Length: 114
Length: 443
Image (cartoon, rainbow over all chains, first blue to last red):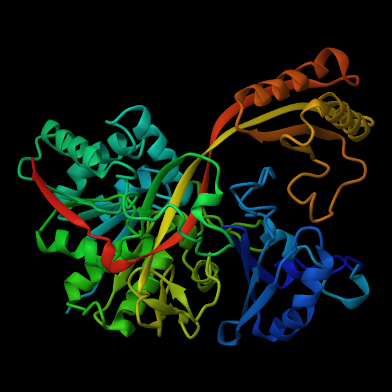
């Protein structure tokens, strides 16, 4: 893995990988720490509250976080988070396949959070 | 008992063919599954069938069958596929004709039907996962298909079919059926059915478990992705399996590729619903077992659902999309100006249609998430709308193209397209009301 630059803010992508999927208007993004040592940091950085607060216009419904600690994984299930879903959304990515990178782009360190 | 070797030859309707041929020729497979149906795919297939009763199956069926049937016959590999989409009998007849044309005398083609439940679902059936009923949708229904499980597929294997073709066969069930058939698993043995469902779930999206849809340069590198191979599962009688691929193909099978697929489109990991089981993936073990070999075990399950999911497709009118590009100094400002002009000129449709305006390069996929660039130098205005009326979509294309002469400076590269749309909704049907049928044809 590339080391981040000296002053570069660390983002979730630096410690974890993810994949997004859709069912109707519900998006799920699974996120996995590469190194078990980073799992606690991942859980600390990616809280349900933070997801809801960071994307209020996009993630409109209930967010549930499932944990698979033995695999260092989190699964976010975000209701009403696909702009109506593939039936209604006029987003080029109407399945929200790119939502994985929405999560991976979040800053890791508290002072970087906006 | 030796391991059962099962491969994937397509993970969605438009998936690649060449690696599927390689896999059948070199993989020593007992079975190969071509999963080619999504909720919207089946709805589009119904529209095709309405316009021509001989159509409504996967558009790539001819090419796939011509390439794979001889290889499957030579290797003794059974093929299971839902390429029948909205017209399994036409797909089976077409496959039979291809088999005869290729001289594959005696090839047994099994056709599974009974997934079309449009005559069985009440017109005011409530939705499965949202408020309201079918009667609330003011659009014409194009088709209704119940997800069929292994109880529909296993009889075709018992009849010693070489090729099994159906419509809405549930994705993991197509993998589970030959496992249950080979190992003699009882359909009510939720532990083993859950384990086999995990195998199906990991395999159903094809190369998504062998390095496809995974590469992220610098952090997740995948060797030779261009020649990525489809997956093979070596499944044991207890349902545990090793996920692997052919040695001479690109891609990779690692604990990371397997984990991303483990929860792909899964919500609660303890309750993954299929027609066959309520599967529990929450305690699955994922362990490296050599180069491009990952062992998965410890999936389980509880009782299968009493109802089957039904996808209802509606005619959703038309979607129009059009774009013009801007590059160089102030490209983003000029693109933004073009966006405002189109909004003003399309105002006559305000309240009648949803219009979406994006500036690709500055803000599009993540626009609603609130992320945008500030000084993008190469942007594309992209405007989309959906309407029951084709004329509305035509107007959009006209107004975007006209920017070439009466929009901001330096715009170029107009493209526009109008495509038909479908809407899908889900309802439930008691499983005993769904009666799968089997018809075996011999070349």
